[in-house]
Length: 252
Ligand SMILES: NC(=O)c1ccc[n+]([C@@H]2O[C@H](COP(=O)([O-])OP(=O)(O)OC[C@H]3O[C@@H](n4cnc5c(N)ncnc54)[C@H](O)[C@@H]3O)[C@@H](O)[C@H]2O)c1
Image (cartoon, rainbow, N blue to C red):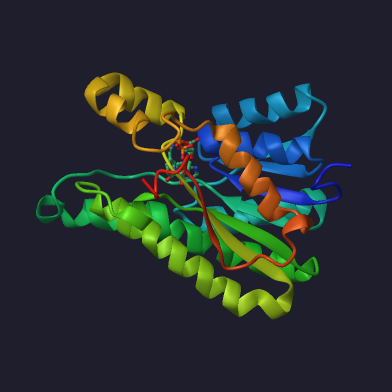
């Protein structure tokens, strides 16, 4: 029996990278998966991958930076499966980086919107759906940038620090309502976005590989395993936590 058997799970940013690995792992563990992304092509491709391996999934378009879109996305999940038990809020996009004093106001604001406000918007609509379903579990995807700080990426690091605080505050509000809320903090993970960056910046790539105690990048599936555990009933007494999955990047 899978760890998420009988559950309905919503995953944002599931068109590629970490979100895609999470959606596939949820399906492997028996969940009916609502695969969401603002890229219809990659989102539908994830659904196909899940169906090819015998899993159950639908695609639901969602731009998580837009409130109407998030409302419609959660509605779509309920219309399809009549309940929502699990949600992983993985979609995020950094709008730019650079010295803190050089950020344009709109770039800073947009990064907060795409990495922090989006997480709040998702929970705003996921929580009522979970309350109607008798409870649930949420995992927000943070970043080790929120723990260590990240030079020349201050807006992203600050936004992810906000995700950590939001996760703890929401967990404290919802404990009595049988909704657990946790966050997973990845180290450097081999996703298409990171691979492209590393190809362009080979010197930085070598440093990143050595930025953890295991001397290698992480794989999206390694994040997915932690998320599936936190979403499952095996984590029934865990809430308000931030779990780093980083090959020991933080302790280095
Ligand atoms: N890859 C890493 O090394 C790393 C490290 C720390 C944290 N993270 C976090 O993990 C999560 C996933 O990262 P990734 O590397 O897999 O990213 P990615 O860029 O490879 O994939 C992100 C996915 O989210 C979608 N997306 C982006 N903005 C969206 C929006 N507004 N609405 C709907 N979909 C949207 C994209 O289309 C894409 O499919 C992010 O929250 C990221 O900040 C990644």
